[in-house]
Amino acid sequence: RQEQVLDIRSSLWADWAQEFGIKYHMVNVYESYREAATSQCKTSPIDYTPTYKLFLAPFLPQQTFSPWVLFPLLVSAGVIYWDYSQTSKANIPRSRIFNSESNTLYALTYIGMFPLGSAAPEEMFFRGYLQNEFYSLVPSPFFSIPMTTALFTLAHDPESRPLAAVGGLVFGTLAHLENSSLSHAIAYHFWVDVLTGIESYLLFKKAQIISSPVIVKTPIRKPPVSAPRFTLFQFQTGI
Image (cartoon, rainbow, N blue to C red; front, side, top):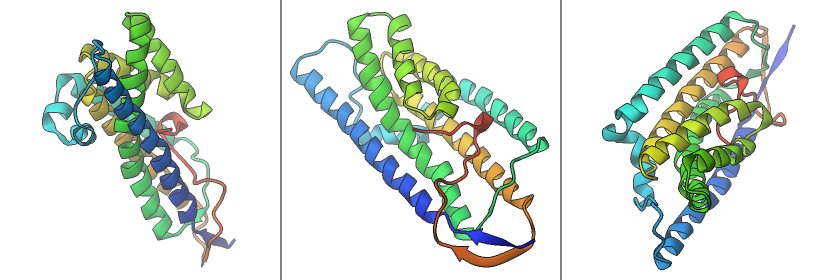
């Protein structure tokens, strides 16, 4: 049986454009919130670390290797490895064959772009802005963290919401324990997304390997509705 090689770069580039648009606005909201808090002499703790330094937090050893980040990250890595090994032993859904350029862009998207686009902007908006506001309404982490996590969860696709709910609780707890400092939550968020992105890419490649080896190497430029996504417990990372 012959099978055509698909080109899904257009679909993946659309993901890049969407990610940039959404996360750009999240960062703007947080920066405006900090400016407004300064002008109003707001007393609630807000992380005034420069935005570029928040984006650099995952690459600073003092953040990534902090026990607050390293321990949950190692636990997450073990769960992701277990899920990958179990999924590999199961019947992976057969995928179409994609050209090398699509496979490369898929890797860059899920291992690079999504973690960068998710970690700092989402933590600024959800933990830096919303969680602080909920805490101002009811000064209790047992109110602010669940409320923020509920909105964070609803912002994800339905199939990714269980993972988002667990992650939201961890991110919110880290921000609260650090007196609203976002660096540890951003570092943990980033590296968890990198790990799930690696798993997604490996399963994406494996699904193609089990496909028909007889290929007609004629790229089809028209992309499918969306690129196939394989992630932790089949959940999609990021918004």
